[in-house]
Length: 154
Picture 1 (cartoon, rainbow, N blue to C red):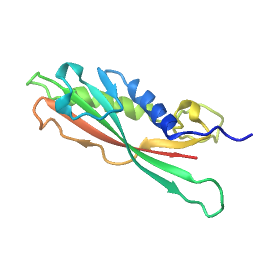
Picture 2 (picture 1 turned 180 degrees about the vertical axis):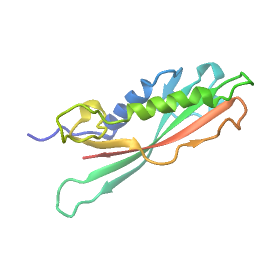
Picture 3 (picture 1 turned 90 degrees about the vertical axis):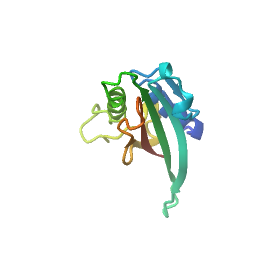
């Protein structure tokens, strides 16, 4: 029996479901907004932006594995001048890291990769794929983090 087709939209929706579930968010969207367009009361906020889509060709004739790049933009506003706005952002980044950790359940020797829940068998792995850009609160009461995500799927 062949595997069901995993669409680009299905993949983006699965990742966005994971993002939406992060604790502490007031706003989440797949339509990227600049932080100046997000009211302080609507923050912390998360936005998912799609990036490159690259087929990783296999000379064996097997179906291509695709690599998709996404960026998650996190914004947090803290009007308390005695406290860095990154104190609101850091727990959300930690929660995203935990959400992307592979499940440790399963038989010994089973793959320990994040497969985005019910997309097991199609998503080979999803992870934070590079440096997380942050501003460390140099924008005054506004903090941002840009987190690169890479997903490989068949």
